[in-house]
Image 1 (cartoon, helix red, strand yellow):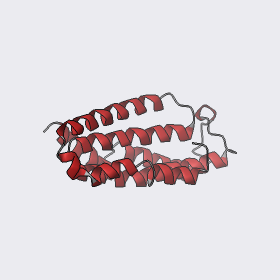
Image 2: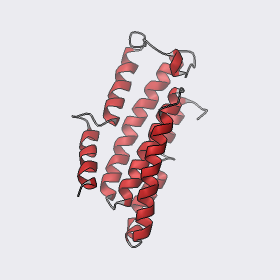
Image 3: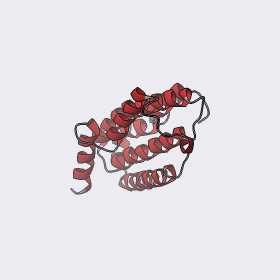
Length: 165
C-alpha cells in the first residue's frame, strides 16, 4: 500500500488486482467443464467478500479502507463467476474500475491536501476544505453501495435475480 495514490488507483482499479478475475472470465470454457471447481470458486469468492468487508470496517487508514473494499468487490466478482455468470462479472469489473479509480484519486487529493495524513480518526469536517473531492467521494461511495440511477444499481439487481433463480 505504500506508494503514490495515483499508482494505487491504477493498481486497484484497472490492472493487477483484477487480472485473476479477468483470467477466470477468459477461461470460462475450462471452468464450465469442472463443476466442483466452480463450487470451490464460488465459496472462495463469497468468503473473500465477507472477510475483506469485515476487516475493512476496522481500518483507520483511508487508503486501506478503499483497498479492502476492492478486495471485497473482487470476492463478489469471483463468486458470480463461480455461478457461471461471466458477463455479469465482466460488467462488475468494468464498473468497479471506474468507481474505484474515482475513490482513490479523490482520496489522494484529500491526503495530499492534509500533508500526507491518512488516518481517518484525524479527519473530519472536510466538506468545506475539499468540496469537489468530498462530492466525488460521495458519488463513488453511493455508486459502490448500489444507489438507484447508478450502474451499480443495475448490477445489484442482477446479483439479486441470479441469487434467487
